[in-house]
Image (cartoon, each protein chain N blue to C red):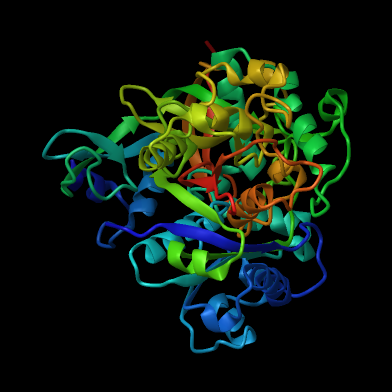
Length: 139
Length: 388
């Protein structure tokens, strides 16, 4: 699987940092995780030692980028860099088929009724401006 | 086998928008603490400083500058950063060094100066305390992170925005009695609910202010305290805890695991339970934080804090007064200083310096302070020492 990923990457010869790899997967609508080769526990790509057994050998696993909303906030007062983003939510979502949770930027949310807890969402890229982009899926 | 550690002096500036430089603010608190302890700087064997954004006033590596300006340039110091938990995390390190017998008498001082950078810049700086790649970088401000915790809490435990507002109202009530508090203004639940939304569901009056300020204490061995002939307070418990750095990493977003762990350690060391605490200074950076804190510290069962606050249990005259100083909400939150400020409040309460807001008959008090959304926390427990 590691070989496949590096073959499809445009800069196959360059060493990508862990964040760069995470971002590359997000741009394909996926969440990149690390699966511990010793105990099978999943951690996010940015984690370097297994939380369960402390081993540091992983095989990369690209999880599908769909998930469900765990909690969120609608940022009425946007932080610097997000002033032109319109009304949006910062969302914590659980990634389907794993115990992992990630956070992302979900544009277009104006009020709590727009985003009930448990709503289905999907990763759809990584913006240098707004970070991990997610969108709401119709039921 | 560790030595008993005591607090023999304390001092604090007003918290608010201060014009002086960060070093002058720090020195002001240090001088008050040194005078209160009846010592001279020559008695200080080490300086422990807590600060997060000294860079905003062009001063990092703060300890040597402070020690030099106290006339003790050859006394070693260090500066500790743990976001909003810097004060208590530093205090724990200072405590540990005296308990281990490395030093008999040390200065523990926290300071912050950020208001001069303006709200937008301060907000951006503070967002760097989050797990930035997952949080600040994806558009979450600090109020936003706590707002997401509020939403999780309100969903699981059926608390309302009015329940959160009660915390702000109570802390403002107490702050009115504290001449050094940043925001001394009576507010009502209605005022809170009508204040502008910052990050849904949190509104402006659910949030503590940006503050400048410094607080300092003198920590010493019990021998030193007794020989000084001055009023002192004993530290009977100390605990540290940690949680996953990002909100997303916590299985249950309605609790802060680092508080639970730190409190458990501190209670065990002191040989007491939450019921023995007469009052507590807890970390109320946002109203939801105090609700979560008083459950995590064991004062109320999970899900019951909102009702307890509504019924007045945590008011100055209640069963377990919480934040008699006014808390971060009203007293203010200079993030490097807050954890130390809480100890100053305990010292003042136990040595007759908290006129008008004294918790009557209090013998044992707890301080609780955490960094960011609770990734780091420290809890300390103090006992009043009666002067014979």
